[in-house]
Length: 114
Length: 111
Image (cartoon, rainbow over all chains, first blue to last red; front, side):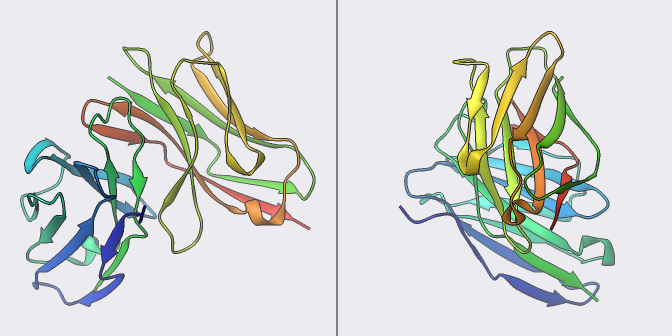
């Protein structure tokens, strides 16, 4: 099976712009989670989607949003970019139950905000 | 509520020496625990997973971890370090609809 794919791998944006990141989960996986990774804060949970419904959300401002499509592909959007949004954004997929299933991670999207 | 603490943000070992990375957890329910490894510019790769089936869990690349309920620990070990083990290691516990990760331990292997 193909792994989790994320596009694009690298992005450079300027403050105030918005960005959309994409994630394609492993075939058959219905849960997609997003994490922000920075040197100072480590891995921070953004949100989790299952069957197009957001089941959980981390402590991030409303500028961060996401959605999931019927084929389980997911996108996250960050509006009005700030310098502090520079990070590696990781997507992970799971068959369904995050309490017991293993999360499989994509390679990440490196976002740089100038 | 679930939480994870990794002791030591940086660990250095000599090639061939024992690797020991520490993880303590807190969970109100029997936990599912994980160790992941991250190489530079890559995502996280699962090393091993504890599911209560056995307290000693063997993973990939010669790593293993022992679940100790009395100590609320899930330390990662490898008998003999290789240069290729240099990476960042994350311990995680599952919670409803998310994982909670530790802050990571960067392992350096000295020749």
